[in-house]
Length: 106
Length: 120
Image (cartoon, rainbow over all chains, first blue to last red):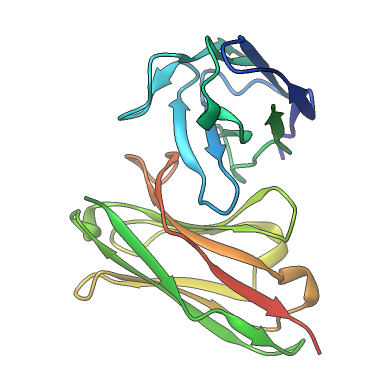
């Protein structure tokens, strides 16, 4: 099983600032990594797939990068609605595991 | 617009069984793989199962193998999760999710979830 480790666990920033979230895989997943956003009381939402592709309707301030074992989600300028929990997830093999999440707080 | 509506959750005693349903609309249901993903209270996300569009291929996470069975009725656009031998560790919100492209794809659309509580 591939383990995904996200850092930091909590990130405290202000609106307008730049956020950088990290996801590290225990073995290579190629580019087969996605990022999801989960706001309180809501279902997760797909943001980025295959490391760097924005899902439909996702604003351009969200971007993803990386390959192999190290990946980054960047939010260029935080909006109030961006404060949420973010999860990475791979699809390189079974089971398709998630990271433990990064809470982005004001 | 894709809509996924889960139902069937509730309070169940340890060792009991429950069947969840997910009614889908807004897309050609039979052409997409579908998954169940769960989230224990205050915890992260855990993939549970995936079933191909035809229903012929299924995969499960190890902790539910032999206890949970995913199925689908493509004539009714409904996804099911039969859960047997439930334990308190199965307590979670269960989401159904439409899988992007192939059975190995990401979860591109999600329902709002149904809460399963396993407790005596």
